[in-house]
Length: 105
Image (cartoon, rainbow, N blue to C red; front, side):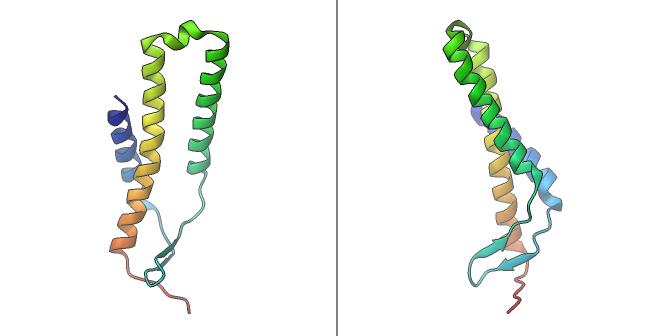
């Protein structure tokens, strides 16, 4: 189940991030300057809120945490967030491999 969610997250981000512009690629030093974005912050906040909620529910309502549907929903959320990070990584790797080197020295 989590593998499917991870794959979905990867595909979504790879499609969305094909338009990402990476301004500096230094292949000689194996460096890429990655532009800042709100996407990473939002995904990290989603992960934090989900983990906080899980910890809260474990402490206050262990019966809910034991339910299958609760476990599946957390696995799907975790898989999608992981897929978003992996999709971005694969997109940057593709840009690094395909784009020409720009050197400012």
